[in-house]
Length: 178
Image 1 (cartoon, rainbow, N blue to C red):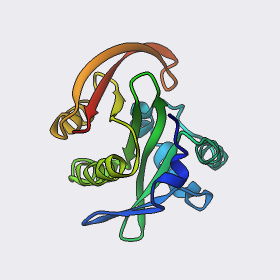
Image 2: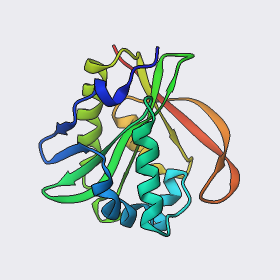
Image 3: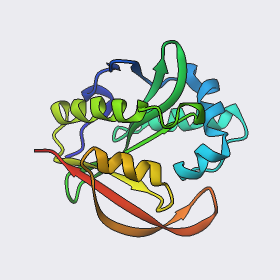
């Protein structure tokens, strides 16, 4: 069953230190700065952005897709990243999450806090039995984060990496709700 995620999830989700707001075109410039950083883009499986227009087009595409939903992450009034739902796997009734932070905000516990709140919201608001994340094998920070949150390595696959333009191995980590 595909649920229109744009309507099923709240527009704003807050945690102790952070606020997640549904991504809009007003966030394009700040997200462009993050998505154009090679160290961030490398793990997102996107081409490194070179224009704000690319960020605008990505936001428009996500917001037009009923099976996707993106939130912009705020620390106080500063945009520090985004996270959201990328796709629905109807075969096993799970959804893919994706996330990124600007490099100055790595390894500060922000993503643990965000994903804990976001996963709780997904579990209580949506009819899916779990979530999964695709991770490059050398993204040790994301692997540790997912494992800390209870995700388990379930599979690996080969996909075209849009950043390197090469086929690469992708780990698929899953978390099933209780």
